[in-house]
Image (cartoon, rainbow, N blue to C red; front, side, top):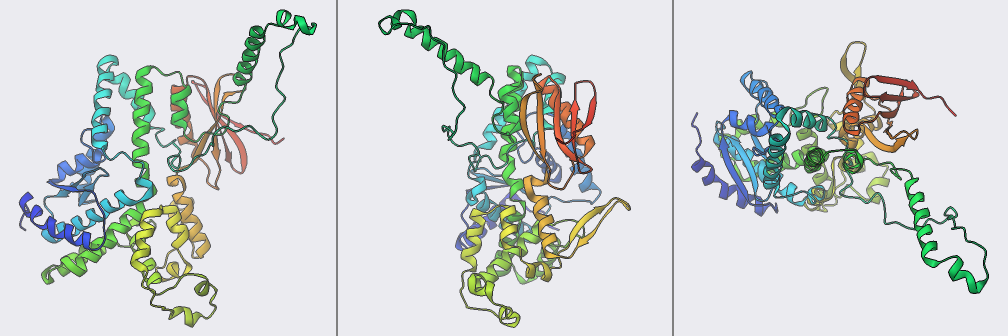
Length: 496
């Protein structure tokens, strides 16, 4: 098999770029680099950013990836990062047909990064920012020692998912407004006096100073936070007793967590969009007859059905195809939805021709949850034999839980909500008036893993420096888990 050079890749890039533009894709300039698998594994371990701060976890991830490749368990064909210009890394050992497919795939990813609403707030110069983060971390290492800084980074990374994934897109707390019904304000006590002596007996300066003191006391006794705070990292940055270098590192971890969050929120859509377009461009424009079999083998592997787990490439690709077909044939709207004639709906075709326009609209406005909630239909589930899987504790394996559409959709949305992670909020920073931190788990039919909860509380306590607690549900009963700094406790909460 012929090994491709940088020159070979550069020679086919203009053709692919031109075709992508003809289809209406809108992307940042893309810089392709050919790398061997060892370099690709390093890049993947660093999340695509080789300039990141030093930490042992990147070495661990590199070791896992490189072993997976050597043992034939996994292969990384490409890696593309959300920047402007967009950097994409290609495997040097890929044959030409695979490089064409992967490059078409990359152009669609870049279009998604540039145009999807959930990436709009992200830093398009993140390579420079990552390099800046690395310099700051190295300075802290020089000042405080490798073990000290690395241990604190370990603690921060263990809670990096305790952010509010939707905070960049919504305003949870509106501007301050006077409530409709306010508690009566305390008044400053004045000495009784005649009107002409008021200025001397109750001096205005004294009254004003007393009013300010009362207002300060009211603020001091106000609940902290006033409302449940889902961005736990931000709350810790604001209120935990951190040293300056610790505050800086926690801020770095939080900033990077928010940068990568949209990729988790749009995994199905992003991969489905890229797969849709590499399929379209390859089959309609790029393939030579001699490449058909190799392409078909690669593409079929990409969208293969994996029993027991979700393949984001497959479901995203098939849903975009389904949306395009439905809007091309006019299978949407009130008339179609209210039609009770099964045969008529099966052959429904108004030749609306709106499919391509619709999928570009979907690409722009949706994330995985809204994508699945809006466009996953019962007909789609039936046609593609989608099932709901659940873990059977008795035989310790995943099994088909249900073939009912509502259950399938509910389970899928549940797994996508908050990236499949528990929703945790800070509700009291002075629990029981002892300066202890109280969090709350928003119970959604899934219990917290007790061991994970214990480890998380331990790491939170290391930052808060006081005991930390979390309210949850265990065995259908309210429970309070606590870490005092020395031991993990479980307390059942009695009803009122």
